[in-house]
Image 1 (cartoon, chains in turn red, blue):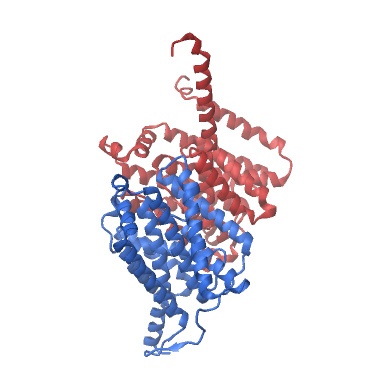
Image 2: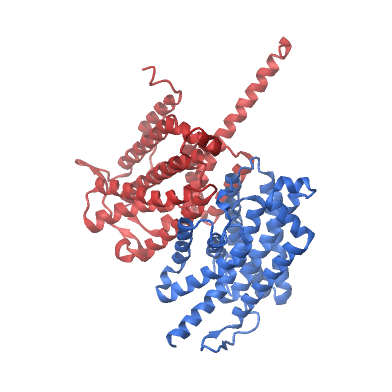
Length: 329
Length: 295
């Protein structure tokens, strides 16, 4: 048991699990279920993307494409080819991983921000293909009639069941990310982020780790995309455009780069804001932009971590003040 | 129209659009050299140029030449404001943060532009009529194409003169090579960075204005043009000025030929496919000189 409780954040996971289990009791309308489920789907993407941005220090502007690949693999395989549901999801995940490897391998061997360009180009190409390969994807009208997921006799056919399914995946993906961060790989990645040269000289194959974490983050996005396709049962190219890539990047930054709980926070706050702004859709873009800029200028470590650090500093100052009369300082 | 005529037509169209990419790529390069960041707000400079031009010429009936210069200065000022404000005051100077910041800024500008001008595509009158000119090969050309290429050449010559022959241009180049050494030599580095943002604002505006009569303009035309200009910069070798011109023209022609001979639906995909190929095969670009080592 001692090993199990070695890291404090395990309490965080316990609280998260309890919240996931009891939250639906307080949610009454279908609308809020949908919002919560979308938050969950975004969280999975953001957790993965945060591993890349926060730990490998690399930018991806093409995560909409990986999210979309998951959706379209699941959708096309099950609708057009009658694939069973879970294997289709697995195939989507693996295929997305391989594609990410093919993009990541050449562009991450180089120093500098080559990945941002490669993912940007890739994202736009995938989005165009989704619209143009009508025979497979249904074109701009989208793909309809994607079956809902099922385990044995249990079909995830309403918002509540999907809530548990999606948030179960959120929980697992966060746990996986946490274990990765606290492992040898995580420490290596942090070293890479701190100083690539120093990490290299310690014998860490920096390029290799960066490619691995990129592939992993693409697979997270793919799983989330598959879940989305089976939940909404309809997909179209407009859900996977350049703008979605920027949205998830914004969520990572607002939550805090390299912060696991920040990913949940960022996805939650920004998804909620987009939904709240749904009436005035044109303000979406501005709101995201303002949010992104304010956080980047004033709290570059993210809102959650930024405030946490702020209180830590205040507490430290108070302690110093309290002990001033002791003349030990 | 026979095949060679068709090809000639595609190449002329490609040259025109390639000139635009070259100007945009130049804007990306100037900021990259001064600061090391990728300035995604470049895309918005293009849209703003087009929309300022539209507002002045069509809505306020201002003289074309005057509008051109007002728009250019206006967008240059916006570029400068971006630097004076958020970029300079960002708590963290990490490259990754500043790149994200330019993405955020471009969202704000695009959102604001949408509020001001709406989402409709609008036209801007050509600089000198619409009568097509027939060329030797049988291809036709609209005068605006000549304006685009002519202004691009002029801009490039002026930039070349500025960077090679003026003290300020040399100071900017020195800053690009080594910021600390430049500061030690008495160059006000912050002012050079400010200037580079103003320059790329002006360049973006020019690109947006000269293409507007051909392809119409809207609050978000800049995104595709800008991202393709970015692809052109990579193709030429990121940070390299001659590369920007070559990359722009090459990308324009490839895209135009691809759209004409393969499929126009994949027009946008072709440019980014070229980008991916370059990144995988020769990431330093045509004229690159080890830029990939920049940390």
